Length: 495
Ligand code: SAH
Image 1 (cartoon, helix red, strand yellow):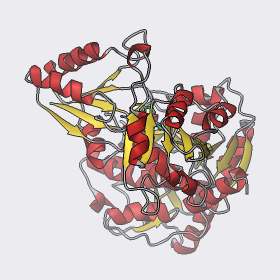
Image 2 (cartoon, rainbow, N blue to C red):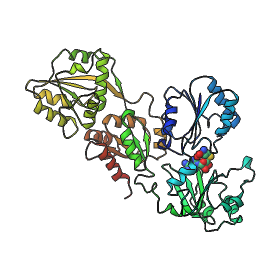
Image 3 (cartoon, rainbow, N blue to C red):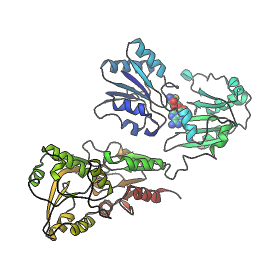
Image 4 (cartoon, rainbow, N blue to C red):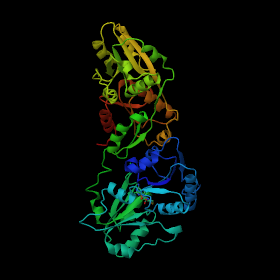
C-alpha cells in the first residue's frame, strides 16, 4: 500500500491526524526536500527513509525516476508513505504518481494536506476571501515548463476580480506583476509576498501590484513564497497574528527526554517559537535488578519517587523481576513534585507526601517529619542520583535503601541535527530540567560556540551544572513548566 501524504506548509502542527497516523505505520517514507524535521521525527526508527532530494545530484528527482522509486519500494512490501509539501495534488505531481501506481496495480490512498496557497496567506493575516472584497480565489502556478515563458492568461484572471495566489513565483515576480498590469489590473491593487509561510522564519512584504517587485527585492525575499494579489491584502496589518507572537523567530532547544518533552514544546510553539526537540538524555532500565529484589524482603515505611521516569521505571523493574506494584503494599508514598505524583496517579496510586519545593533537601526535610524514629525508607530512583537525600535520612537514624533502577546517559544515537544548528548560531535558548540533560547537551555541543545561547534552567543543581559548562544561565522561579516557559519569555521576548 502506498499512501500519499500532504505534509502541510511547515511544522508538525499543520500535518493532519491521518497523515501523522500514516507516518507512524510506515515501513518506508519517501520525502521531499523542505519537509520539516519535527515531521520526519514521527517516522518510526526502523523505517527506511528516502530523501527524494538526495537520490540524485540535481536537487529534485525527475518525475519518471520518482515514479519508478515508488513502485520499487511498494513491491518490497509493507506501508510506503510518499510525503509531499503542502497538499499532494496542488502542484505536487501527486496525480502522476497515482496514475503510475494504478498502471502497475499497486493500491494507494491519498491523505490531503494543508496547502501553502491557503496557509501562507492565513499566517500573514490575509483571508483569501472576504465578503467585502471578492467572491473567488484562484491558485496559479508561476513556474514555466523548461524555462520557457509563463503561460498565464492574465486577462481572464484580472476580469474575474477574485483573489489571486501564485505559487513558485518568486523569480517570476516582476513578470507576473507586469503581466497583470498589462492586462488592466489597477496598479494600486494590494499585493503581498509571504516567504516561508506558517514557519518560524516567516516574512512578508505587503505593497501594491506596481510596487511589489521592488519591495520584495529590497527585502531579498526568496523561495518558498506565495504571491497574493487582491484587496484582501489590506487586512494583513489589522489581523496579523502570527509574527507578532512573542517568541516568533526564536529557536529553542528542548533537551528533556523524548517522552517528557511534549508539554513544554507545545507551550513554546503556541508562543510562536521554533522548537528543536533534541533529547539529551535517555533512561535505560538496569539489567541487574538484584538491589531491588533484595530490598523487597525488607520492611519499609515509605517508598520515595524522585521523578516521573522513576515511577515508570519502578513499575517496569518490578514486572521484570516477577512482581508488580503490590510489592509496595503497606508503604506510604512520597513524590518529589506534582509531575511525579501525576504518574503515580496513572497507576491508581495517591502520593501521601509532596514537598512544596522540588529538590532533595526539601524532600528530606518533609520526610524527616513523617518517618517514625528508626524507620526505613525505600528510594526508587536512577543510579548516580544526588547523595544528599539518603545522607540526610541516615544522619537522622533512618534506614535508607537507595535502589538503583535505571541509568541516565546521553542518547545512544547521539543528538541528531543539534550540532548543525548550534554551529550555524541559530539557536537562541536551550531549556534544561536536570543536570544530566545539561551534561548530555554539552557533550553533543562540544566545540560549538555557545556564547549567544541562553541556558534556561529548572533547579539550582541544573543551573550549577550549566554554569560549570560556561553557559549563560537563567533559573526559573519554580520547578514548573509554566515558570520555565515564563523565564524563556523574559529572556527572549523583545518586549
Ligand atoms: N503542494 C504544495 C505546493 C508545491 S509547489 C502545496 O500545496 O503547498 C512549491 C511552491 O509552494 C513554492 O514555490 C511556494 O510557492 C509554495 N510554498 C510551499 N511551502 C511554502 C511556504 N511554507 N510558504 C510559502 N510558500 C510555500
